[in-house]
Length: 150
Image (cartoon, rainbow, N blue to C red; front, top):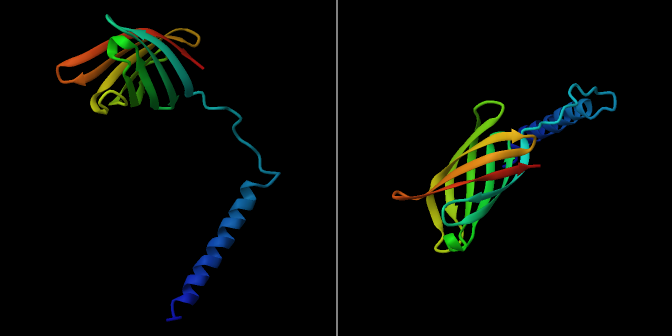
């Protein structure tokens, strides 16, 4: 019954000692920071979008290649709220493509086919944005608008 306790205790003791020794090197006040840059691949986005019969607002949070957010439409789309998680692909310095699944949050909620979009930088934090929401195999919405990133 107690045969396996000694080897287990030895592994635990060496793990604690090893972690503490390495941790002290990294947390030392004399440890030099090699890179002072902050990653600028993350941002918040706020978009006003419109299609032929409705307007909406898109709020998203992006970090590196992942974007999550909500797409909120007005009464032309029955006040429907969509949620999405997208993969972002940087085409060049000014153009970002994003694609991912789409989820209808209210009004008979459920997983929909997906959404595809493009953001084109106009000036500074202002982008021209377009999104295709593929709701059913025979129904999609094209929304175009302006996006401001923070």
